[in-house]
Length: 246
Image (tube, rainbow, N blue to C red; front, side, top):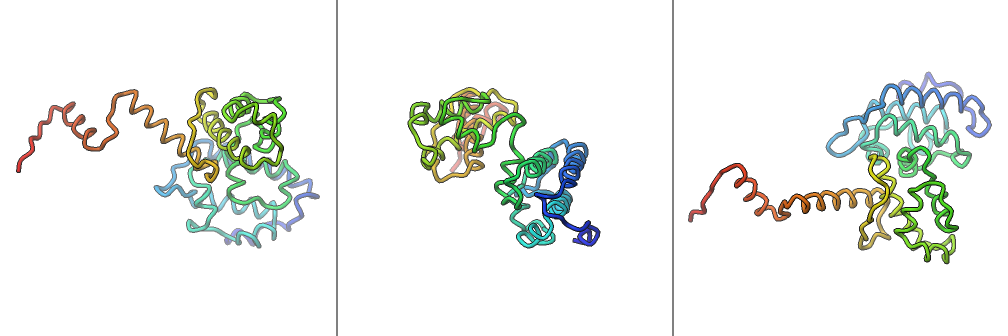
C-alpha cells in the first residue's frame, strides 16, 4: 500500500505509551466518519476503503508483526475482507479499542477474534469472562444470565473450566444473546436448540438464529413455507387467477 512509506517508525505495542493515544484517535475517526453501517457487497466483504484504513492503523499499531503475518496490503480476496464483511466503521472502532486496551493483544489477533471484539456490546463481558461468570453463578450482565440459564445452571455449577463441550454450548447461547443486544432486541427469551451446534462458530450460530426468527415470523403471519403454496397465496391476494392448462 502506498501509504506504507509514510508510516512512523514502529514501536512494540506493549511498551509504547503513544499507541494508546494514537488508537484513541483512530477510534474517534472511525466512530465519527463511519458511525452508520457500511453497505456491504452481496458476498458480505468489507468495503475496500475501510479495509485500507484498517490495514494502515493495524500496521501503525503492530508494525512488522502485522505485515509479516497478514501482508502489507489487502484486497477483496483477502480473508480479512471476507471475515469482516458486514461490519460498520463504529464496530471496527470497537475492535481497535479492544486490542489497544488489552495486554493479551500484544500480538495481532486473528480475523475471527477481531470480528468478535468488534461485535462486543459496551458493558457486556468478553466470552472468556462470561464463561467464568457462568461457572460460578455470578453475572455482571443480564446477557450472561440468559445464556447460562439456556445452557443449564446446574450443569455449569458442576462443570470444570476446561469442559469443552459445555463451553461450546454456552458460547452458542451467548452469541445469540449478543446478537439480540446488538440489534436492540430483548435479551430474554427462548433460545432454539440447534443440532450439531458444537461444530458451529458463533457467527454461524447467529445466522442460524436469524433464519429461525424469519421462519417464526412467517408462521405467525400464516405465510406458507412451501414455494408453490406461497406463490399461490400471493397471486390470490393480487386477484390473479391462473388456471392450469395441459
